[in-house]
Length: 491
Image (cartoon, rainbow, N blue to C red; front, side, top):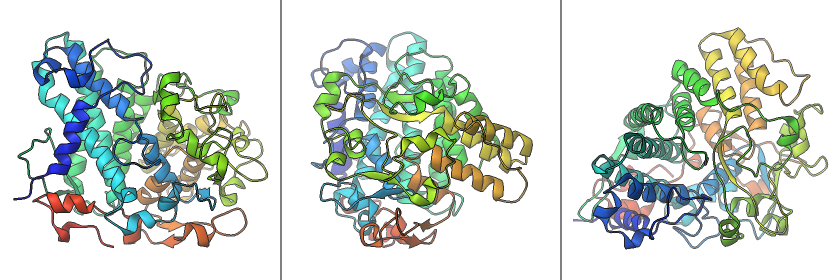
């Protein structure tokens, strides 16, 4: 019998290796987690917050799974998504750790870190969320603290499964019965032998249930000022993302409305200030990093790979540019055009607060995304005036001269929403994910200022091309009794 040692090893390491990277303040001072007996950890809600803080920490930790400078937590996954999309151009550089994903080398193998990293990153997070859910009911402490801890764990699990299916399968609306991801509802143990691939329907049913639990619990929970915690608003935002992927338009609309209601759109001058401060009024979810934390990350962080003005990989040639094809569609009156160099189109949207180091916070969700979800949902529901109004509310905050096209039953309006997503959310992790959700296939523009076929390698692929899917790690197939070679994604 094969023992699922890989999953268990990840679970054990996660439980014993918790730190506080990613939060300026822990919920309370505790001893290091590896000195706390398992029973003591969940005897009180105070102890349980230690493990929850470990989940927040894990979002930003580097070198957790692989000795590669592309292993730096959730923002690494976001950057993988963007370089695999249509609108981000990578230069030819021997210093570019994103090249493997940009060129789609990552999707051609099941044995290398570049295709395996998302699998193990998200499953490690799921296992820690399950550890909390398995134990929190027995903890002593105020009910609002138990609701908070439990609600955040449900939200993390839903978010992780959504990201997993986006990397390892085509979109739900293309084929609901397609093989999805193994579902784990409890923390793994040494004797566990693994679970089979569920269907996408089963995976999304779990996400919906987790989102319902999360928003219900977090509406009656402790409220944190620190945005690394998943708030009720963030849980509504995760729910909106899940509903959008499923085409559940009424849910997507409502959840997006609830998510954004307390997060106004930022003023224009803030849009050009670097996207590096979690105090930004639009940020719903992000990690505030202390000087000790971002110094410890050093070049193994998001800003090292995108900001050419700080001492990281971008500064030695691994730059990120917007395609000329998309840049030319942004009006000169739009503040968003100013976050790209007018000549080279190299990004200036993300930059550190101090170019001598890596002083910057990490962004995971902001309210402008919710406007875009609501606009698409209103259009799909046939609420055309509302769809036009919501889209104009967002875009006129960036370009006062903007007027949205009339929303009608044809696809021209939703294509405008998708274009605004590409502009507004450029560099925030939606390129590959949106390309698959919208079932476009990959069609990268070429020519001056766009993608070079010699570097990007994969320029065109239809929506169901197997080259667009990451492959299940071979280690998972080897050690999981419930998954065999026939369960692998096609090459």
